[in-house]
Each structure stands twice: as C-alpha cells, then as structure tokens.
Image 1 (spheres, helix red, strand yellow):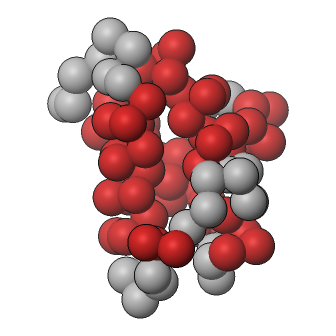
Image 2 (cartoon, one colour):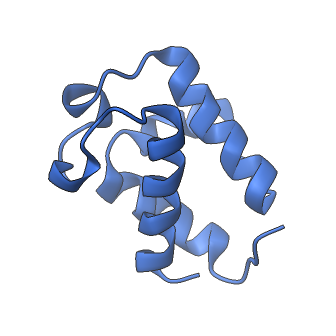
Length: 86
C-alpha cells in the first residue's frame, strides 16, 4: 500500500467512527483529538479496524505513533507496504 492508500484507509475508518465530522478539513500534522471528538474507545476502534481489515498488529506501546494523520501514515507505511485488504 502507498502512503495515499493508507491515508484513504484511515479517512474511511474515521468516517465510520465519526460520521458527522467534516474530514475534508482534517490537517495531517494536527493530532486527531484536537480536530475531532474522539475518545479512547474511538481510538481503539481505529486500531481494531486496522487489525480486522489488514491484520496489522499495533502494540499498545506504539499507539502514540497514531496521534495525527501524518504520524499514522509514517508509522503504518512500512507495516502495510505489502499488505492486501482481507
């Protein structure tokens, strides 16, 4: 998967979790929680959806890397480079 593919995947997951939020204004360098009404359960839903769709395992100690779109894509890109959707 390319970085653009990963970004689209994250946007798709976020639209499922927060359907009322306007994701078109989402800034890549600003933490998700500063831009959206996400709580800790929503955040876990993102992690679980990545696991379900792509079998990507994200250890709890790496959750910090998923703060913003930019950091999420940078973290996931090497892990998802050769993955296909399940």
